[in-house]
Image: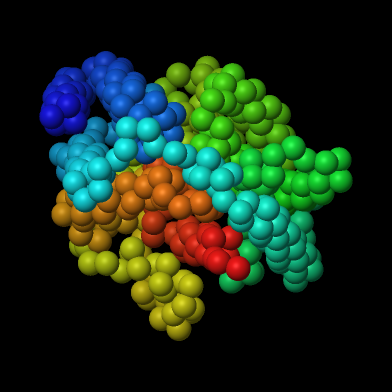
Amino acid sequence: MMTAAALAVHLAGGVAAALLAKTGEYLFSGFVFILLAVFEYLFYYRRERNLLQMEAVFSLFWTGGMGLSAMKLSRLAKDWERDTWISFILVYVAFIIGYEGRAAWERKKKPVPKVEEGLFERLEKSEGRSEVAKRLLCCMDVVLFVSVACFLLEAAVLREVPLFSDKPHAYSYFHLSGVHYFTVSSIFVLPLSVLYRRIKGKLSVKEWTRVGLCCAAALAIPILCVSRFQLLLAVFLSVCVAVMAWPGIKFRSILLIIVALVPAYVGLTIARNHDVAYLNGIFEMKNAATPIYITQPYMYVANNYDNFNCLVRELPAHTFGLRQLLPVFALSGLKFLRPELVSFPIYTTKTELTTLTVIYDAYYDFGLAGVFLFGLILGLACQKTASLKTRGQNPVALLFCAQIVMYLVLSFFTTWFSNPTTWFWLVLTGIMYFYVGRKK
């Protein structure tokens, strides 16, 4: 009943925001969504006392992102179409219905005990704890070795390392088809090291040195690639795993890690050869005096919703599943034999701003029906993933959960689940899950 009331508040807030936007009160319209996002996060957080509860995370970042976009601080932003408003609210409602529906079914099938033993408490009581730690270390070594080897192969074939290039978009060209999936998998080394530390307990100097060198080598790859996204993803995955592994971790510790990333982020921005005038010319802020350190993150969130609005306004016909089948076409190599299967235009506010929302391809394929079905399936899958932590003794379950949490945090950024790299990472995590968890 409480969830139904929360959904009713969301719908009422969405209608209010839409009416305010129609009258040109864009700032107030966006503020309504931001208030909703905070309210919904606190509502779902208080039920489980879990900072990374998936409904709470999706509420905060999806609805909060809508609020930023609805403020229309850039001249690129146009009034949203009717289907745009419906899609943004519909996917949220469908997600909550899917998540809550599966959770209710799980409780009916097997009631949750009042005092539930955690994954690490169960593992500490088992005899296989040391074996699990060894296998986690093995996963770290193998992933890092393959990632470094593939990076060196790409650098040798392309005869270039993006960090030392003077091209504005050097990273965009640093790809060998099929090989780059393995290169960017270095993002898993840091979160695996966090799991290893949690399982192993206190580490010796030799163990600290080994883990530290692995992490340094893993972080070197996104820096050499000049990929801010990979660097942030590696660190945030590690933070998510740490929060799940140590529930009592202090929020200020997380904040310090985020602050420590700022110099690296700024440095990589400079290394990408994008000056302030170039970026301001693209973003077209209504207030030209807005500092670039505010403009850039704002546009990386807000413009994606406007790109979706472009799709709604300009799409001539739906593609009936072809867009969301891109991972199949890419990973099977079929896209090279039949390029017309993946040759569909991307509708954006500006050529340079190509990031999209998580529902972009769902609408591209099936319209509003696709958006609702996508949200429902995503909610079901998220609840299933979250339940992995409540049973068994496999710590890689936390890596699964951390990935999904990150995709929800960045739900405004791209079409995660029709991205071949996402499925490659999920399959890789699945391999590690079965390797670490298999019986000797």
